[in-house]
Length: 431
Image 1 (tube, helix red, strand yellow):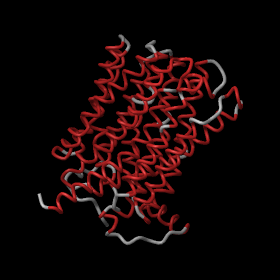
Image 2: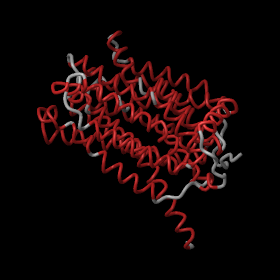
Image 3: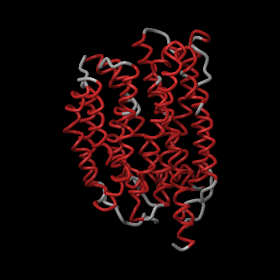
């Protein structure tokens, strides 16, 4: 291969790593929070175990309230000044806030200041995340060759699952080594503190990559509050249709995502009676299984198109959600099998989002259109899914509630999918 070809491949590999590690940092926090929620709730919240757990899940959801505001700031800024600079800022904010959670004194030490500080740090995470995913997906799509955008984009979602799995495995590993008493006292803090080096590695990788070639073709524009407001007005006026379609697809995507990943450890332990260790093992096995599927699903989308894989995923989850949850209730092996079944059906959707969503907008509005639509829908429906599922199970007493919620979300996604234009193999819009 010519030297220039080797250099191009090396640049693409650096771009993939730099984009994926931001996603991994975001989901690393979600992983340690979801898998350590019983320790966090006992340390930082008052009340009984069930009450404290519900408060902790609600606090998890609170961070999603500010994600749209982050998207409204970071998205237009990234479309004006470049994707790379915004991604450097967001990864610092995310990792610093996660690190800070590990330093919060207990409720016994400072009372209600403990959950108050947690809420502030979760809001900081949410605000930074409002620009992280939209920027990373845009950056990845603009660097990838048109014919293989699905394949390369799938590695961004691999960062999601690996970051979540790393957080889960750290929490599980410390729990096994330290024991329950030490974990409740101080051990739960250690995985949060690990966010600092992860963020520094991500910042280093992002400093070594080039701005996307698609963005470089567009001249940077002025930066002012008036320009910012004008950009937002233009975005909503000109691109409201793809923003609505994207928002409905994200509803389906992230209700499944947060139900399957963030809520699952709590659900398996508190609702199905698995031990804390078993409740941690099951999703980790399922997520690693899904990680192996993502590159193949992304490559298939380059050949068959994005929409056929989305139809397969949404329809398959609608049909299989209830049987899969009923299988989970039979024991540990059933839980692994049920989770892997849902993961198999969800992977085609997850693998293709970073190739599908950025292609819905032109270069001048890509970061903002994706960031705002994605985060509004995620804040309303995705991040609230764990708390909503727990509340609804408590009201109805039906442990199959997450399956019904998942089915409803997939039905919404299927109503929006006919309005999605197929973009596999086509150049990104640049006007």
